[in-house]
Length: 404
Ligand SMILES: NC(=O)C1=CN([C@@H]2O[C@H](COP(=O)(O)OP(=O)(O)OC[C@H]3O[C@@H](n4cnc5c(N)ncnc54)[C@H](OP(=O)(O)O)[C@@H]3O)[C@@H](O)[C@H]2O)C=CC1
Ligand SMILES: CC(=O)[C@@H](O)[C@H](O)COP(=O)(O)O
Ligand SMILES: [Mn+2]
Image (cartoon, rainbow, N blue to C red; front, top):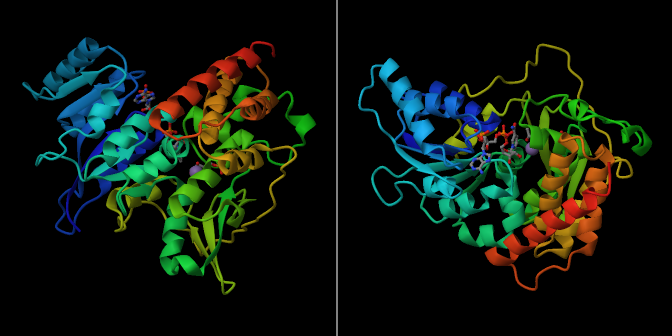
């Protein structure tokens, strides 16, 4: 166990702020900090918080995807002065490539990070993911979208053991997979809370509102992933994520509804044994494991309380009301640029839903239509992914303009 320098991309979000919490708590056996943060980045939607993080973590570099470097600098200056840190002046990078620059910040120098946590939301995280994989750092990946849209490109860029999942289900699978060899694995079972609309029929989903979709039953997360949990698109993305991370064929990956979100996923082995990872729903556990991988971080989160009565239930997915998982599997089977189209269409439709332009059912219906119209590129390259995404976003918005 040794001290690790980390970089956090998306530091102001749900995962980013919980990661900073983990960093503040974790110590080495001698009581010294286990982690320190050398650089952070965010979208620029919350400059106050970013400046406060930069000063309290004493980072060496900060990135924002907007062009507000001047505002950020003055916010950092005034917070640093108030904290008695005159002269504190981290490097600031601004503009659309800032997180990509931060992802590789200090690489190859003594200041370089041992772990990069990508906690950006959306497929905009692809370039930072590839940049982090171009260094010798471990990539602790919360930004599932970059793996799904980049597919083989991301896998090829990763050296063995470099890509470590932070997503709760995939962290659970990675832990359960420690119990057996690859040829002993029969199935991966990815659990789903079922979201706020679990149990509803398709007809009963027609009038649900954005506010209702943002009321997740078990997790407190950013708006995109919360909405994706409501449509089950999140589970579709996670089935593809599991397929890519663990090289298990899609037909041997199942999603099952587990409303309590305590069993985070399971591996079924060929002898009939199932290994499950269980803990109360708290992302600090998989975040800490991602930062410390392969070592656990003691005290990262509360364990289950076995002195209290508890019930865990499991039920099959309703693929009629929630066809997003089957659709994701179809996208992954077709391969190439199809998963990128699935994700891009979803990102656009979710924005339209929250803007009140379309209904809830239009989200997955539109993904299906756009995916159906897509001709996958013959070769998966960064260029073909970006082109497919651009086409999918434009086509989605064209279709959505006729709804509402
Ligand atoms: N939240 C959770 O519990 C879980 C999340 N995940 C995954 O983790 C990722 C992050 O989710 P979550 O933390 O909930 O999301 P949030 O919306 O809470 O946070 C997103 C972060 O990304 C930053 N960001 C947005 N756009 C850009 C950009 N162009 N460049 C750089 N940074 C940007 C935001 O900055 P700002 O707002 O300051 O502009 C913010 O810091 C997603 O992929 C999600 O699916 C997976 C499992 C659980
Ligand atoms: C915490 C986490 O990993 C989320 O991705 C979670 O999976 C969302 O819950 P759902 O199971 O409802 O999608
Ligand atoms: Mn998850």
